[in-house]
Every structure is written in structure tokens, then in C-alpha cells.
Length: 76
Image (cartoon, rainbow, N blue to C red):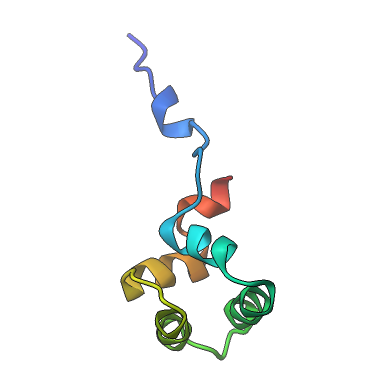
């Protein structure tokens, strides 16, 4: 008997909380945050603090997952 695992392969319909927050930033702030995420020597904690200064209300673990590509954004 085969088990239906299709639900585990469905594409997400929206980005994670971090991705949605970044999308809503003004262009200059968005470019700054995205550039920081690409820099391996900038920590997720420091990017999270920068986002908090811009009004973010998500946890640092969400930022860590986003930076590592472990959130739903990587599958969209």
C-alpha cells in the first residue's frame, strides 16, 4: 500500500515572515537588508537588529532560517 506524501511537496503560496517584511521595505532599505543577508560575515542576529530598527516584529530564529535558506522562501 502506497502512502500519499503529496502534501509534503506542495509549493508554499506565500513567503515567510522575514521575506514578507523585506518585500514591504522601501527600496533602499530592502537592498541594504538583502545585501547583508548575502554577506557570510554578517550574522543573522545583526541583520535581525537592523530589521527591528525598521519595525520588524519577528524572532531572530526566523531570520536565521531565512538567511540559511531553510524557510519557505527557498521553495517559492
